[in-house]
Length: 557
Image 1: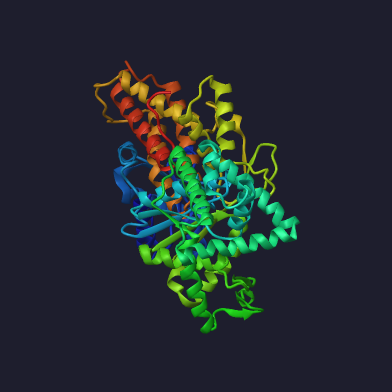
Image 2 (image 1 turned 30 degrees about the horizontal axis):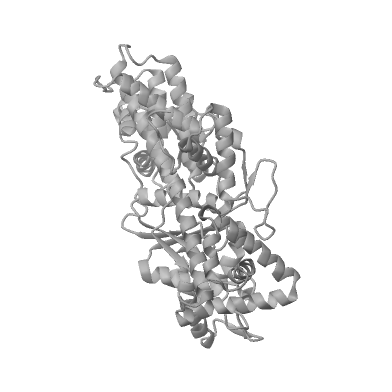
């Protein structure tokens, strides 16, 4: 496409003596391989009839491109349609998976996502952002970036104080030896129930609230004093380790590894120190014993960065996190992925950072997503204990898959859930339909996995046979055309950091292959060599796209 755009711009400059930024689109196949409205743009500027301009442009472009095009025609009020030659289409198809964007070549990029808090359970939002964050990281990596996937979580803070309060009640005091009575497979759920109990006590019981506030301070003191030995410390560190074990097991299950965890305890001191330093320089303000950033002059709102107990809030910890990431990676770009509810919060944090470290703020992008709900479900809350857990989503997908296929296939289930999340544009709420996600007949992950397995089966049956393309019939042409679109789609997905463009393309590609296969016998046909090569290119493109999405492309299903 880029070569075609440059040729068009060159013709326009030579013939009409002006520069126009040419935009090409992919029309329906009956109209050609590319289309442009450049003649309409020129006509307005030159005050000439659009079709006359289009005719002159088409003639000169056909002359410029020579045997690279089959036809350059005009349509409607002045659109120029370009039909490529078979040799160009074949070349595009052959280079489909080799041609990668270069947006991030040589750049260090940090992606931060998932961000679960120890002492709490992973919910559906963590699953969603883990899947999306991994796919976005893959897009950056495919475009030449040096990617670093990191995770951030609150191992200190009020939620820990709430959970520790309930844990101590469950243990009958500071008795770390009693933790051995909690079965290994139930530890995460046990801590989640303690968090709910602690939250309810904090909201409904004033004496309990006061105790929780003091426990919150004690947790911070563990780090200040490097205490790992007191009974209270042993309970805290053991339960924190349980949380990380639980997180790691789940990330391994879904195939989303992280290079580094940033616990809040690790970044809090730097955040606190930085905010204090910038308070003296006027970036932050004193407010009734707390330290705030006044966002109103920037169209935002005021937020507390250090509370009246001299404890850093989430805001100060995020300041510390940004600075730690900068120190560790000196990133060209940092991408943070969270739920929509964090949008205004993060805008204030980044605006505050902009006042004293503008290069860090400018290099940081914040992407947000909606809430994950089961079909027919409502928003749930971990505070109330009716959370939609990450494992709940996988469990209902397993049930739906077993009902549909009679098999318990983790590979298909993960493909179903990931694709169901990724095919939607990031930002809106996600309504997850288990039955739809596992279907082998619709726009689903298993459908694409099966499509790849089917193509590989054809190739296996003709293993060792010649695969070579010389020319194309019409059905072959349409499949080659669709395969050749892949680099353009990948470029768009990278430009916008939106994986759903890949999903849409892969589904359309699989549909195009089905139309081709209905019309075109492959094995045993006189055109076998050409068609086998097209099947090979199709399978490779499908696999490349699925891999970018973090979805396996099995050879058999």
